[in-house]
Length: 354
Image 1 (cartoon, rainbow, N blue to C red):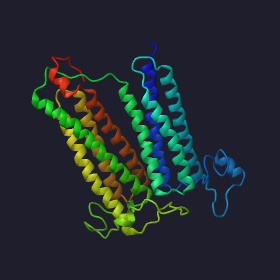
Image 2 (tube, helix red, strand yellow):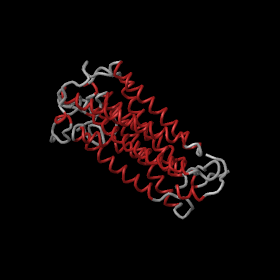
Image 3 (spheres, rainbow, N blue to C red):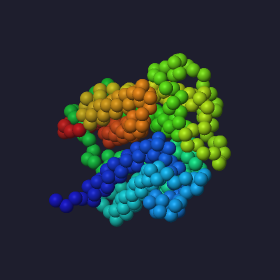
């Protein structure tokens, strides 16, 4: 059977999600191994396409030495990001070619292309502005935004879930409305938490609290919140490794932990409400996925602190955040794809599905 245009677009969107996740996670690995300035120029590496070319030309100076391992990590990240951009261009081209077909996406592919172009600009500024935290955090956030939109596109190209059973009782209608609102609230709380996590990582503030559940062996150590959340500190400073003193890093880490409590509460509420929507098995499965991803991320974060922030767990923490974001988006999409409360109250018996 020849795949339809929806199937082709869906496959491309899923390939973009997988590649986008790889780019985001490997970008975290590059940052955590202090390789963000492995190639201090952009888009090449010391004026060459590959670090091998730069090494053959004896590139680098005493002030900016060529470290081949770091350079390769940085360039592999750029190659993967460029491949993702090319995939999105192909996706946009096919969506435009099939624009008259039923169900062909229109807006999302265009937004994705704009995001990729903006990400290229942020990637250039990341290097030229010497891994400035506000730029690197923005680069991470918009990278996850790109993955999220590709994921939303993939979800949108699926068959919509159906409700099981007959007309819903008023109690079920209210529960359904609460679940939808709670899912949106959970998504917003998670977005804020991801931004805080990015700010923690790009300021190398994880070490501000080397113990758990306390911080510096105290429940509320001395922290400099004013200094910890200064967004702009001018140009010319190399931020690799961090420039903040410990009270500022403690403030950032503490805020990230408090954000984790808020996000966990909001996501658990949304998941529990979705699980109680027994008229939709799809909503229940999406709620379970959120709980599983949340527990995984919390475990990674706690063990990362207990083990002294090993590279493997620090990188996995970024991957866990991305998976939790995708699970939360799937929950929101599932609840949005179901009929509205008005439709439900007027509906008759519907086929079992879900």
